[in-house]
Length: 120
Image (cartoon, rainbow, N blue to C red):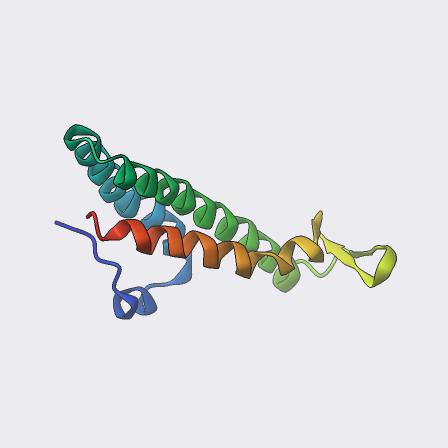
C-alpha cells in the first residue's frame, strides 16, 4: 500500500510515531521510487529522491533529539541549565542556538520530501 503525505492523517498520529514512520514507510517508498528512477535513467528524480531520503533521516533524528531534550526539561528538573556567554544557555548538552535552527532545518528537509514525493 502506498504511503501518502496526508496532513490530516499525520495530525492524528502521536508525535512519537513520526520518526518511526519517516524511517519506515516514508523511506521505503522514497527508496523504491529512487530505484525505479535509476532503472529508467532519470537523474533529476534520482537526485531529488536521494535528498528526500537524507531529509527523512534528518527530520527523524532531529525529532528524536528534540524529544529527549523535552523529556529532560519536563521530567528531570535536577538536570541543571548551563548558562553560556552571550545570554545563551544549554540543557543536557543541547545549546539553545542549535534548537533555534531546528525549524529552518525541518522546513528545508520537508520541502525536499514534498518535492520528491511526486515520483512516488
